[in-house]
Image 1 (cartoon, rainbow, N blue to C red):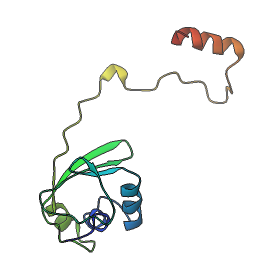
Image 2 (image 1 turned 90 degrees about the vertical axis):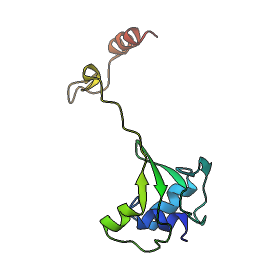
Image 3 (image 1 turned 135 degrees about the vertical axis):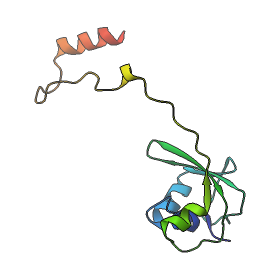
Image 4 (image 1 turned 45 degrees about the horizontal axis):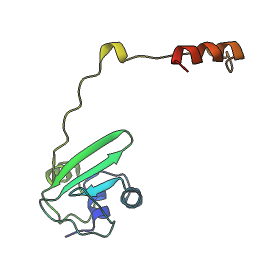
Length: 121
């Protein structure tokens, strides 16, 4: 069995072991919906939920014996990806919102009032 941080690193969830340790200590990793510790042992069948950037990944441990970083095919065989699919983005909502011209600087007092009026403040 391996430590949680080294296992996450070895299956290529994080680029470095220290990044994996920092994520676990920061509360971004949960094992069976409980906060995890970096030195916690990984057991087959555990469900690990981890957050990176804006994504949340849900994986189930198949091979808990990986301690060293391995190739991508072996790493992908060590877990099952249980992450639910994201819904498709709403076409009307995609794109840029409230974009100012480049170099326009900060809004003037009048423009701020108009912005506040639009936002309903």
